[in-house]
Image 1 (cartoon, rainbow, N blue to C red):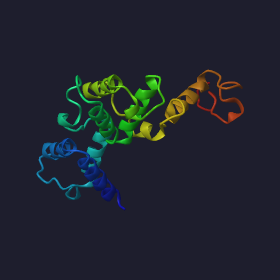
Image 2: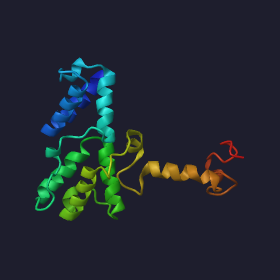
Image 3: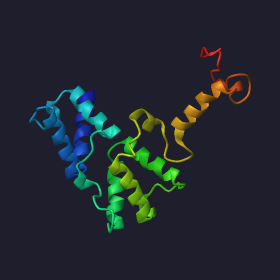
Image 4: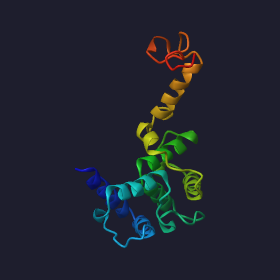
Amino acid sequence: MSDKAMLVQQVKQWQKTSAGHKQAWYNYVTQAASKDFDPNRHDASFLQGFVSGTEVGSIVPTEATIASTFGGSSKERLVNDVKTWQKLSDGHKQAWYEFVKQQGSQNFDPNRHEESFLQSFLKLTKSGALKPMPAGMAAMAGKGGGKGKAYMMGAMMGMGDMGGMGGTGGMGGMGGMGAAAMGKT
């Protein structure tokens, strides 16, 4: 499958999530001064711009699809809203995982959390205070087991300046790059 064909599939799948997702695609097309809503009729760079926007949170579904009222919302609706948000991209899903871990939990199933927990998450997403992880970070991050590979890699790279895990200026016998190898001497 070509890159364009994969992008077309991503756009179509995103639109199928809800009416608000479909409207976000229509808004994107309209803002580009086009009236052609068929993803197949756009070039790969146009489609990539849309997909990237959904991954970083600059393109979001219309308000109607995210919980608009938090007081009195049923837990089932809140759970569905969290699951819908996670389905937007890997970055959205990883942001949920990070939120759960920051709250001291390792349980990633929204059904297993109180309404107030879900409401807090949705309020942060709606306000923009919680954004999806960038695509590169989301690909490296993990669901469980600590803070994810991206965090671990960052922590390990920072050890070069502190003497690392033994030895002088690197990761000792671990094969890491010391300060000298990185040109910091």
